[in-house]
Image 1 (cartoon, rainbow, N blue to C red):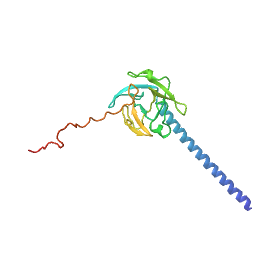
Image 2: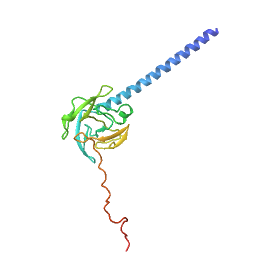
Image 3: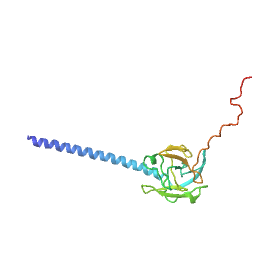
Image 4: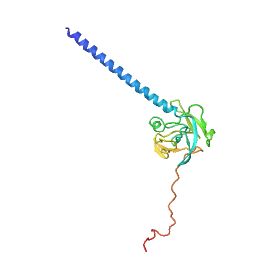
Length: 186
């Protein structure tokens, strides 16, 4: 047997094995990509163009069709979103699907849209782009309220389209005439 033909068979076998590995890897990555795209499509289809009002511990605030709190980002300017990439994974934009609708107590004239960098339309209210928060697991939760994340604060949105800011606790009584508490012992 000639050494050259033996070497050619080994090289041919290595090439075939390498090709099989690359094709298998491409198939696996394709399946993973397909499943991930399906997941993204399902989460995007949960978003509608509906804005309603719901009473929570913060008072009446805007919510989406699923009852999830809608937030505004203090970093957004001129009606444009400043939240993309990893920010949008934690604070998914509320995307418009079909005609936007206003629920009871919501001013339809304040509902609008802004174009995102990927071309999708994000709902706005009083020119503020609207988002949900991934840590709000149930309708009516407001875990994103007053969070500082991605360079600015996040707030639930009032029916007027302004930030809902938690009320500060009442100030301590400073009109006391004695510098120390009264002696509880006789």
